[in-house]
Length: 121
Image (cartoon, rainbow, N blue to C red; front, side):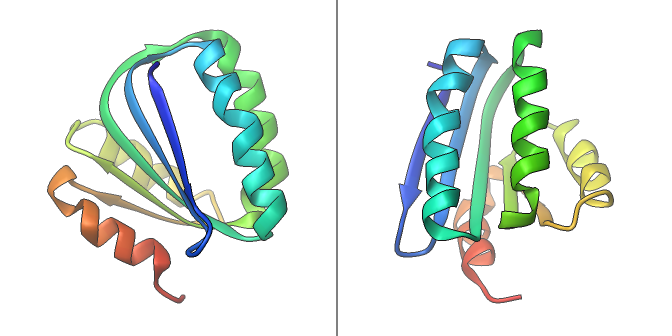
């Protein structure tokens, strides 16, 4: 599985760890739990850890867009954690178009990323 999904109800933070290529079955397996987590808590934070990335199947694009449009207003902070060089500029560019606070961290800064998403605005 290319995606591992974990929740922490006490901090309203979900962690998504990506390794490899994201296929539709992987994406579908985490979509319902992510939606349920948002529905349960109202406003949540996400930590996305990208260990490796080998692309994604095109079939995940439309469900991903629908999820983002429906839920972006409920996501307070997103920390993207990765040492993959090209992810940082894309993350920063995406942050300009979102009301969600979005910040990039290196893998060595994972604990700092966790602290940041849990901190108050």
